[in-house]
Image 1 (tube, rainbow, N blue to C red):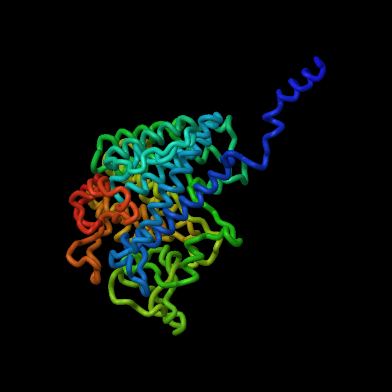
Image 2: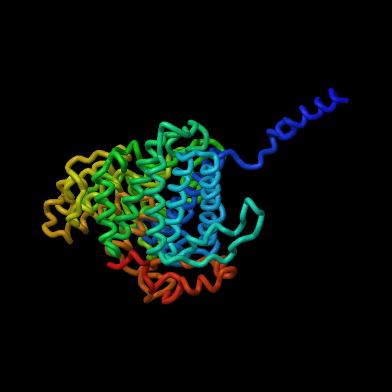
Length: 485
């Protein structure tokens, strides 16, 4: 009996381990969740919201078949898709990554997930203004299986930015390439496990947040940018185009660039007249990169012409307008961008032009380097472009004139990054845009935010109403906190 009892006791010691099915996981592997977050974040921010809506409002893209976005009348379903993807999929899974990484002692995974969380929240607040932040993502407690906050309050945009800046600084302190390796080819479709590059992205994104608030809270922006740029060891940032945060796709079923796949399946737009005219007037080498000559001019065999569809104007025939350049739509494995080195250099140029501490960078040096890197990004030839009369930095003799040059050239460089181009145009008012001729809301001016989707208004009406005080028709009237110019 004693022998049998001993045998039974010995068996029960490993009972849980023996009876745990390795194929029935209680949670998804972190790398799988990371890959899902990245794909959804990039697809939503750069395609669904960025290309289909924000690029039109920034006058980068215009449609010659379905002009809804151009006339400020995007579909509620499209807006709802962006909101749902950000909150119900990207942010909730990024939060799960953070919580699990803390428990599993994975500081680099925690930091990466935090960077992605910040990117998603910044996108949301830049599109809608006040949004759920401090009380968001609390609808269900995984530990207790209890329902939580289903109608979260909306935080003020200023408070959201304060929180996001703090999150990025905390993430920067977590990154350590000597521990917690991120496996290659396992979910990290941006940097393939390179923790040092993730840290550069973290701090480059921090610079973006600081410059975004620079007109509403210049003291915070000035101090923050100086802190980052004066300590490259503690706060490394992008140092070349090789550091760019971009998601590369594969030309295989289910893995192709969603923007290109959608565009090529139903071509109904291309670079706008505003953008084409700007590039033509400056002999910009990016013209033939961003756009294709019109079919009509190619068929004629003479001088190639570049013509943009006017945003919200009379619709032109497809043969008479320029379509997107081959660099962006000819390769289904081409990347979509989260942030580039050129953008970082434009941030430095603006800060230097403000008279802030930017280390060894002068405004002119950063401005010219930014344009150079923007052109080089797509293998363009710079030539004498920097000497063009309305590009030459030395021709701008006042801080205001230099600020306009920097802002307009940044707008050009942000092509195919619609949300950022739209945000920067609102912040700087450059290039100067006016209400489109066939606006669905004549006399209301330019849209300064997205309207909240009906799905959110239906379930969280009180908080939506409070967040839209002073807003007209969901998109006009009340500017965002950082939009003070």
